[in-house]
Length: 378
Ligand SMILES: Nc1ncnc2c1ncn2[C@@H]1O[C@H](COP(=O)(O)OP(=O)(O)O)[C@@H](O)[C@H]1O
Ligand SMILES: [Mg+2]
Image 1: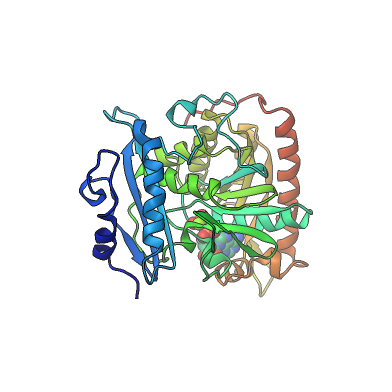
Image 2 (image 1 turned 120 degrees about the vertical axis):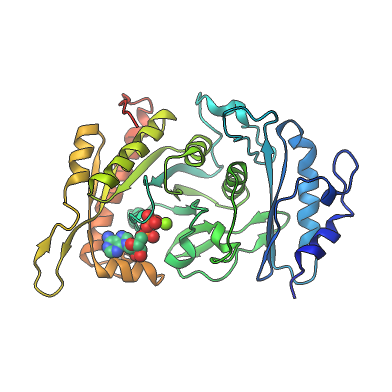
């Protein structure tokens, strides 16, 4: 039996804050989520005191892990700037990595992840356009090009990897706090969804989001990777902007459906990455057209070609068109992504072509990181 929230709080009473008061009395703990033996919560502290809190965070994790019935635990340390001006507090701290609030000016950008050559974001202005489906199949396409590929599901609002890859097991902990990622179809993958239940309602405050992402970037044994594909949360708000700033991105791939409305969101996404000097590697048009499986007739349900035109207009590369197809939906929703399970089919070919363009863009982006920037009004 997993401990209750109260039992966890009781256990934490023996741990003191830097000022000596018992931890549960300090008002720094978030709601404690206990689900199926997995425990998750955050400690929110003043950014100036993060260093003093890190050993406490670790002690908290060790204490909870030692409780009977606890299968895994993740305690995120979240830094908040005191005085709360207009800017969202985005001072999440990786342990021992000093890239706090001051690191926003992208001189060299945030510190990279050791062993990982390039991190790319797959993003969309809004949800439901097939961002996760694109991310996983793009990752598999890159794998097919002979690259070592990881996938980080950073969509904390709707983690998709557990479903996309039918992953039920939870990651093992290696030694102290490091997590071992899960392997599927030759990909190394990690998702916040592995640590919490799909149905668990989570309230993510801005800084908590970054803290969780920082942990998934820096406390997971990713090993050597040529490319890490990050499935970003949809939207272009503060949380996304912060993430785009704090994750050491080599480039971004924007997914859009062809409709005007989706394209407006895609435009915002491109503007967002431009603001933080992350090169846009290109746009993918998803659900581009529909080919009737019975009569073979093709219909442009959402007005095919919109994203290609938009890419031309914005002078960003167009990476390819993925049709709206039952095979993509079914494979994607049953944990058997189409590139892995139907490698000789037409869809796998499309994704591999997209992957090749992404790789080429990435190589280009590596050489000319300061590529001419396009200024777009969001
Ligand atoms: N090209 C496509 N053809 C058919 N279904 C698709 C396609 N792309 C995505 N889907 C389906 O649409 C739904 C939303 O896709 P998903 O990748 O989860 O989007 P997002 O991550 O943007 O929310 C899923 O059920 C997925 O299987
Ligand atoms: Mg998704």
